[in-house]
Length: 154
Image 1 (cartoon, helix red, strand yellow):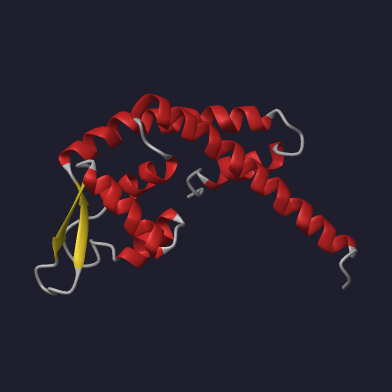
Image 2: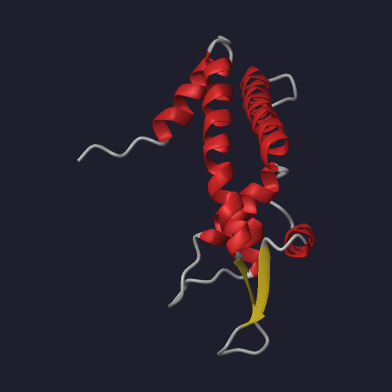
C-alpha cells in the first residue's frame, strides 16, 4: 500500500468524518453544560462515571480505570478530580482495606448537580445528533450511534 492508496484515503476520510461528528457533538454539549450548569463535558463525564460506583467487589474504580472511562491521561484525570474536589463536588478517602488506595466519591452537591445537568446533557446530545443527521456525510454515522444504544433483540 502507498500513501495514495484509495483504501487508505477512504479510511482517512472516514476517520475525519467521525472526528468531525465527535467534535460537533462535544462542542454542542459543552456549550449547553457550561451555560446552564458551569460544567465542562469532561467534568460531567467524570461525575457520571464516579456516580456509578458502588460498595462491594469491584465497586470502586482505580484512577486508571476512571482515566480510561473519561478518555484522559491519569495526570489530567487527577487534576480534574482535584478541581471538582475543590468545588465540593467530589471527596477522596483512603480505602479501608488497603491504606495505599484512595477512592473518590461524588459528594451530595455533586450528585445534585449531576442530576440537574443530566437532562441538559441528554437534550444537547439529541439536538447535536439531529442536526448532524441532516448532513449527508454525517447521517450514516448518526445512525450507527443511534443503533448502538438500542437494546439487542431477544
